[in-house]
Length: 94
Image (cartoon, rainbow, N blue to C red; front, side, top):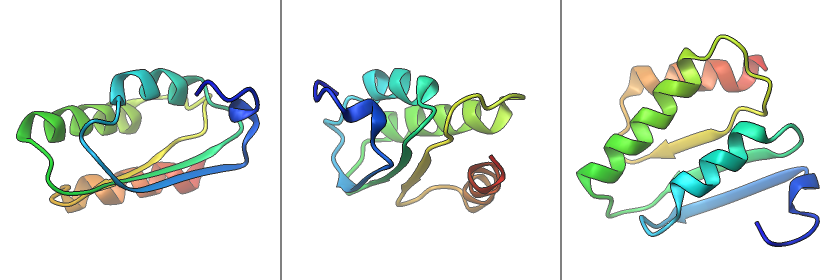
């Protein structure tokens, strides 16, 4: 996030993202992101608390009426299949 050109990247993909990833800080960026396709796949292990927060972020994205930001792709082991499908639909719709 401190890289000067980070906000202008076309694509940003991370796989096996650990729980130490600062989701709160990155979520602020994601809600203001208009240019970068973001894909995050979280690795194992993840605590129940972190999964709850991930689900909360995903629920907020799905529920939003207007996506004036580039919707991120978020995936983690154990993610509810219906929620995955809903997020996928929003991701490809915008």
